[in-house]
Length: 303
Image: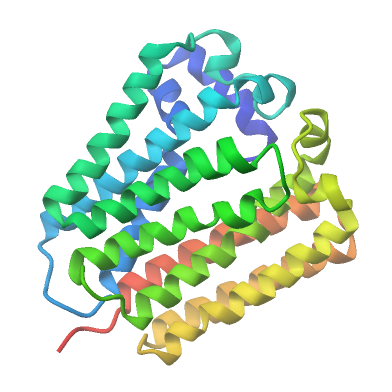
C-alpha cells in the first residue's frame, strides 16, 4: 500500500475532503488493483467471449467486495491503528468516523452487493471466489491471523489469488485451466515479499502494536533475506505462464519487472534499512502492475 507519508496525507485530506475519507476508508487503491486482477484472470482464460459491460461489472463487483474487506480491516484494527504512526490518523482512530453497528451493517451490505453483482453478471462460481477473496482478507487475515502469527500475510495472500479465479470463473465456471491457476499462484507468492518489505520499513510500528510481522519475530536482517528469497520464487513463478501460452509481451514484462524487483530485494538483503525496504516495496508494485497489464494485453486468444 503506501508508506509513512500516506498516514499523514490520509488525515489531512480526510479533514478537508469526504472523497479522500471514503477513498482511504475503503482502501480503494487496493480495491482497484484487486478488480484489475480479476480482469487479468478473465483475459487469460480461454473460452467464450465475455462482453465489455460484463467485464466492467465483474471488476466493480470484486472491487466492492475488496472495499468492504478493507473497511472492515480498519474497523477491527482501530486499536492497533491508534498505536502505529503510519495509521494513527485513520478515521476510526481520530473519531472522524464513530465505530458502531451501523458501520458494520454498511460494510456488510457493500460486501454482499459485490458478491451478488458477481453472481448476476458472471455466475455462482465467480461469486464464491469473490466472497472468498474478501473473507480471506477481512476475516482470515485481519481477525484470525494478524495478531497471532507471522504467517498472517502468507495465508492472506490468497485474497489476490481468489480475484484471479473470480475472473477465470466468469469465462469457464466449471473448469480451472492452467493459465489462471498459474497467475493465481503468482499473486499468492507476490504478497509476502511485498508486505514484508513494508513491515521492515515500519518494524517499530508493528512491534509497538505487538503485531507479529516477520521482521518483529525474526529480526530485520533475516526478514530482508526472506524478502529476497520470496521475490526470486515469485519471479520464477511469473515466468511459468509464458510456458503455458502467454506471448512475448508478457514474457518481457515478467522478466524485466522481475529483474528490477530482484535487484531491489538484493539491495535490501545487503543493507536492510527503511530506504531499501521501501524501494523493494515499490519495486514489487511496479512488477505487479507490469504483470497484470501485460497479461491483459498479451493474453492468448481463444480459437
